[in-house]
Length: 155
Length: 153
Picture 1 (tube, helix red, strand yellow):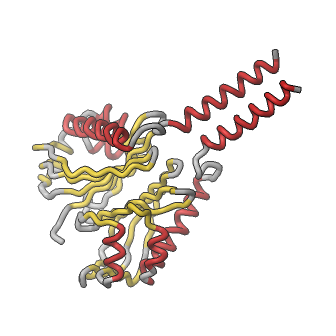
Picture 2 (cartoon, rainbow over the protein chains, first blue to last red):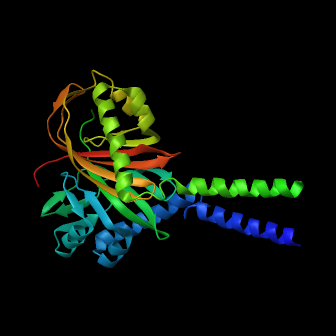
Picture 3 (cartoon, rainbow over the protein chains, first blue to last red):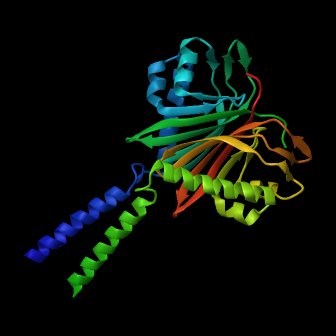
């Protein structure tokens, strides 16, 4: 009887340990994770167009930061201030050529953006290559980093 | 006898599971940053020497490399790019490092103002770059690089 209890206890400990060892995204296929990220990315794009700061606040990680097309480093607060002040405007969004690389609770998303935007009154219609880093924080995917580079002639 | 084997097997599974879960657990962010910066400096040395073997060890197999012209390179394409004649540093200067630590993932940014001959062109414009390091099998590997030319605001 005592041996049976010991074995049951060990089984419980084993399962608990394995559950702990699994990351929050474990048990999902890469395709399922990509689908989740793409859904969130679409929500972010909608929020950018509508100026929905509440949605952006939810999607961007608290320590989110980005490197803009001019090589400028900006924070989440800077970004939200820009939208609220009307410094940045997003007229249309078009993205394609997505590449996803998944590392547990970190997803690298790369792609090409040809959206029409305006920043400090200057229109931006040039194609740019972007990298997004999504991290699962407290069970929720959030955008931790974004960088976009104008696509020039090839090297 | 069978029960002992069963118990030992279960214990082994528990310990392996825990070991896999640990990796960077128990380290402070400062310790992780120090480790990543050490690998970053090894990579910088390798880039200056054209040391492809070291870069092959540091670059993740699924590397996404975006150069300042917005061109996307795979690991194989980047390693082919680093060879002398394609990439030759006149001087090497990097500064303004920042790091954001998320467990086994580190986002590192910095400013490169190195003078470099790249594909026959002397590149002088400073570049703001980002790199993602991920710990795989106990080793920090660079899985993403993205750089922008810094221009006037």
